[in-house]
Amino acid sequence: MYSKFTKIDEEFICENCGTKVEKLGYTCRNHCPTCLHSKHVDINPGDRQEKCHGILEPIGLEINNKKGYVIIFRCKKCGAIRKNKSAEDDNMELLIQLSAKH
Image (cartoon, rainbow, N blue to C red; front, side):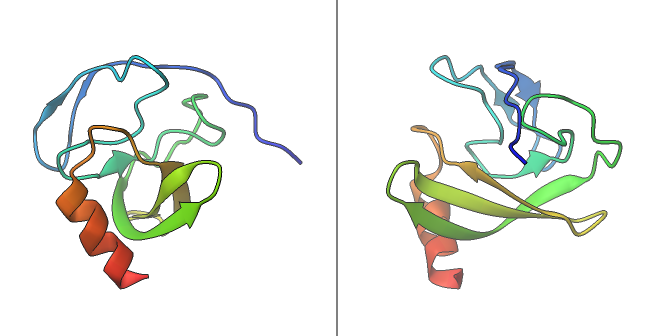
């Protein structure tokens, strides 16, 4: 089984910290670059079919040879684990803190 990717790059207001998050431009924006939190809205990337809509909290970091830094999230509402690659403008201090957790 593979996951289908639907490209949606849109601005949003972070529900965790209130930051107005701009479009990423070179790929899809998935999470807030300030606090690294996300929202549980997709089953497959970009499909907006998930009914949970909980806050995805960053809980760890992996280093992938192809994708670079990959943030591991856990949904505060349903407990689901999701992963997404970091963006160029992500808060590096928070990424370093996440790397020490995993």
